[in-house]
Length: 404
Image 1 (cartoon, rainbow, N blue to C red):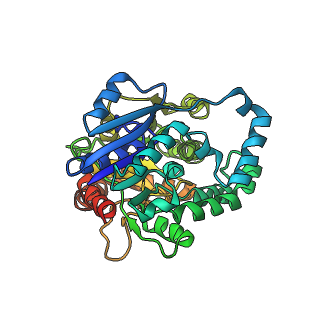
Image 2 (image 1 turned 30 degrees about the vertical axis):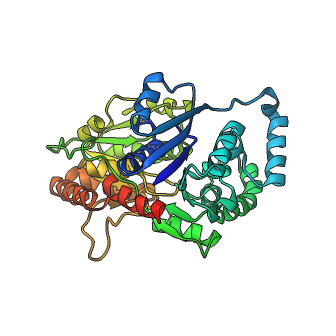
Image 3 (image 1 turned 90 degrees about the vertical axis):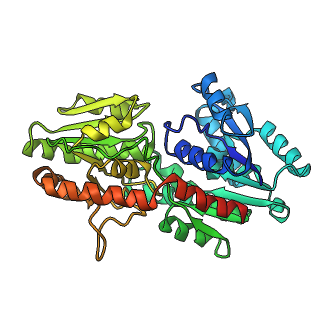
C-alpha cells in the first residue's frame, strides 16, 4: 500500500520525546511492509545527519521548514488576534502556528493525482491538512496521542494551567474543534481505553482503535541487579508542561519528607531542555537536574525507584513503560500509570500507586525497605512489557487500522 504519513514533529532520532518515539517506531514497522512517503517539518535543532538518518526508513522524505512567528504575532496584540482567529475559524493557535501552506499544496496535489491509498496524521496537530471529502476516496487515519480538550479541562480542574482565563475561554472552543476534526477521518487511533471514551464522546459512530505505546527492548534491557540504596529518578522532557508540574510537585511536596526519613536520598531529574522552573529545583538538597543525557537507561538502571508523579496529561506514558522494561520498580500516580494493569484483583503487582504526598512517602519507604518487593515489581513489570507493550505489537495493530 502507498501511504503518506504527516508529522509536523521531526521524528528522528526516536529519543527526542514521546511524540517522536511513537511516530518513528510505527513508521519503522510500516516501512518494512508498505511504500511510505513522509512529510515533516524541520526545526532549527534538527541536523543534516538526522535528516539523512530518517530518509533511510522511508521511500520518500519531504522536509519543510517550520514556520516562524512574525513580529505581528508576538505580544498582547498577537494573543488577541490568535484568540479571535480561533473563535472565528475554530482551529486552535497550537495547530495554526505550525500550519504550512506549502505542505497543504503538496498534499492537495498528491491526493488529486491519486498518489496514495492512505494518509496518516501522526498526532492530532496534523489534522489540519486533511480535507473531509477525502475519506470518500482513500483511507484517512489520525493517530491521537491525547485529547486536547480533556487535557485542558484536566489542567483547569487540577489548578496546574499556566493561564487560567485563557484556558477557560478556550475550553468550549476546544470541544467543538475536537468534535469537528474527529468526524473527518475514516479511522481514529488512541493510546488508552480512557482516551477512547473521551474521543468516542466526540464521534460516537467513528471507528476507534486503542493502540498503546511500546518499548524497544534492545534499548531498554532489564537491569542485571538491584543497586539498593535510596536513589529516585524521574525521566522526561523538561520543557513539557505536565512534566514540569510533575517534578515540581514531587520535589517540593514529597521529596523533603523522603529526605527527612532517608537523609542520603537523592532525586535525579533526567531529561532534555530543562526550563528555569526545573533548573532551580537542582539547588535543593539531594536533587540533581541532568539535562539531556547520552543514555536514559543508564540512569534508570542505577536508580532504586522510578517515580512517575504525573497530575495532568492523558495517554499511556513512555517513561512508565521504559522504566518497567528496564526492571526499575515504579511508583506512579493514576495519570502516570494510565492504561496499564498494574494492581487490583487477579492482577500481578507491577507498580505501586500513589497520588497524594503521604501516599508517595509510604510507597517509596516501603520499597526502600523491601528488596523482595522490588524484585517482584521488577520481574512482573518486565514480563508485562514483553507480552503487551512492544513496538512490534503496536505496529501490527497500526497496520490493521491503516490498511482497513
